[in-house]
Image: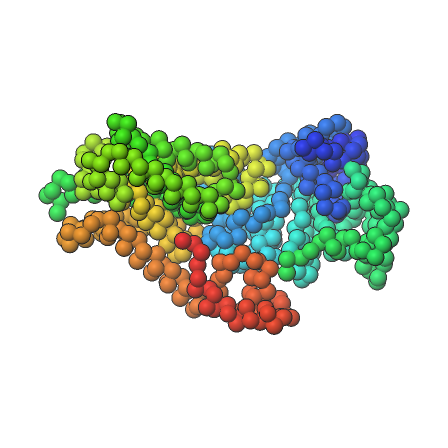
Length: 264
Length: 316
């Protein structure tokens, strides 16, 4: 059964065409990596699935319906500008703020919502983090709580926008294996955007690669190849394999790595 | 002291304002907009003195100016609200304009002092009623938007994706701040609004990391500040605003020292700085969790400084 599908979809943002007549489908329970250079439209694609960016043409289907804003069956983890980083509120209150947070009224959670918050925190192994102020958490610990927020309301589809950004290698691994566990144990469909394929190799079922207003979907070894990527980057690309790792090169220049600069 | 009607009025007015402004202040501190709030009160000075010049009620001019400035700031968005220089210039210019208006209306020197530093002992019964109405509007409006406001404060991107209009919410909130500022001016004056609005809330956030205990403590501390300040002023004959500001500073200091001691005891270190990359390295190094094994000499230097660094706070 398909969890989401683009058929012949064109997406525009501020008059610029981001994706042009793209079609693909993702099956229920799949863990798909979303890759592509900066500005290729990874975030725009995720926002289109959330109903925040309308398709210029074509049809988008999410969980066998049209994309709708605030769809509770979709868990979304946005890229954060880390505005709450300095907050002294607890991790628990941080996760809880997203539980029906869009409703007017007092931020009081009923028993069912409190239980849902506890459940989401437990799923990411964050019971410890929930008792600490946000300001004291590291980047990787914060990402866990963001993931917990995305799990509120028992979604069937997870859209994760660059969860690995600015994390060191150990934290990258722990986030990827956590998402992989959630994918298998809860049968969640996951679309996981990243700058670099290597942390996801061996974990994702398929990769959706964007570039040059086009998209390619398939197994890692089918997509991360010289002909496919040359088409998506619009320039001659070499793919170099070193053990289980893959390096995407344009001439002497390693593309994915240079675009993925860690803060650490 | 309650045999005097002016003291009864003062206590009633201070209670209303303390409750309203400490609740507003809690969110102001959480959103990191304390300086914007500070600037709003200065805009109010120009509004109030301008109103006197125009022959209308200064309270009306004060409310009008702060509300317009609050809505404008909210409209200009988050980027403006964190531009301290731009806000500072608006703040200074507002004081300058207020001075000019006073220059044309020299007879009002006492009124100017009352506006700048507050005159809670001069509050009369009708003002108490006006403050009660204003306070109810402030608390009611804040209660209505508090849930999405918290969401938008802590997780703006997700809130936006869930249909919360960040700009509209920011405008509504800053209008509420403006009203709270206008109310606080009656007690402590324009220059000292910060003390009632920010000090109790900031102290409360140092003491507890939970939302509701924090809100409650913020109110309690503001009430302590206001009531104790009035009592001390009554017995010492020193200005009430002095006592309220002194108590505000004392409460914040105690909370700061208390929370630091708690951290020292539990072996945790806090850093209010902005490079989480470094933060991360440092925490690994300092807490010895083994997350980070290699440290460059520079990072070791930072780690060694971690303890003295943690004594500086950027909250105020």
